[in-house]
Image 1 (spheres, rainbow, N blue to C red):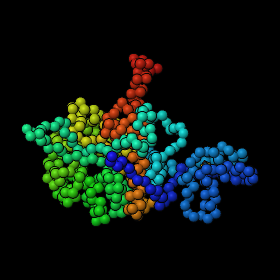
Image 2: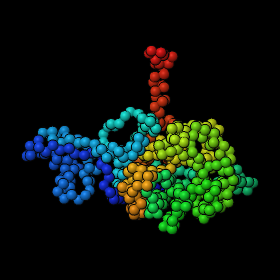
Image 3: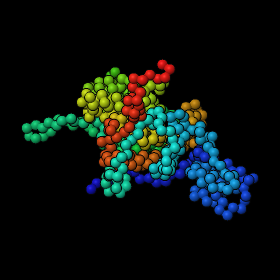
Image 4: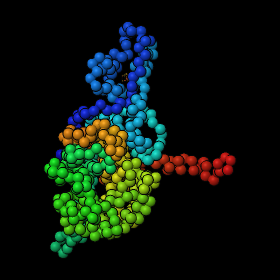
Length: 469
Ligand code: SF4
Ligand code: SF4
């Protein structure tokens, strides 16, 4: 039996103290001072002892802020109510409306430990929200394939194929295959690494991405102009991103590539042909911005023989010049359904790019019709990025992402990938699916807020006018 695919995780501590969520407010003047079972001594995470060490020795690292799990045990059990927890204001400022502070914190945790984040019993967030938060996955098959855990005997495959697939086979009179199978690239995980549009970059930081891509056995999509000699050992894990104008300049990078990303323009057919001349065995994915007409563009590209399309939204998963357009989830549902209706869906691989912030987003994008996704910003966050955007304003990076030792950075990226892989296995196991290929377009394995509202309220309110109309 072939060895199971597994991404090895190994603890990789942050170089800088992460910004913690909670701070301690401790009204010592009211403390009785002699409780036999002082709540501070009973903290199972030992936060107060660490705080004491910090106060005495001032080592410069406020790790206790990072470690408090906010279980509120100390707050509830103190007989004099001297202890309270508060949200760290610096934590609130992290990220933005889409990349919420909690996302950064959980990504740092995964990059450090490689473990699935556990937030405790009960979900405390809102019932629904924008983007991927108005879609829920169906976990009703939880008892099926994972009888002995996600890493147990029953193998769940997370492999995907990139490229066109033959819809039918034909054989000559000697029984030999009479059609030339197109190149297909098999990746063991449904994601490739992308380079975010911001960041405090250096050859070492790019090397961390490339090394991690090689360790995970996936690819890192990168502009060949950014490839410096230190990335050469990882060339097999690089997928050059080119445009029609740069194909000839990057012939060497294209020649050894397994996947080439080509920027869409009107000359895409000639550009694909030019790439295939240089690298006949490479899969070419045509990258185009996603918009309301992407399903029509997809149909046109498929008709022209394009084997893979990357539809890119902005980093909030939205289309449009200023990101005010449709969310990527809706766009992919329409593109997938359109290609299904035309009977050509399996002749092309669809890659979703933009707005993939959590492991669940990867699974949800696949349910909505993508074959795989591009993950970019989360891997920069794995290098401790705080999304402060200083780098876009020419100011110094507070965590010196550029100075990340490549091996350490690659380890943290690999840890994050390992945690995401484990979460995908959990989702698939809970759905009773044995491979991620079957998850694509499985709308039946998900619930969408608009569908639930329609089914629940249409019968009640159909035809009735709102009060006052
Ligand atoms: S809230 Fe819980 S984890 Fe945090 S300091 Fe108090 S007892 Fe420890
Ligand atoms: S922490 Fe700020 S400056 Fe550094 S890479 Fe991230 S966004 Fe850029």
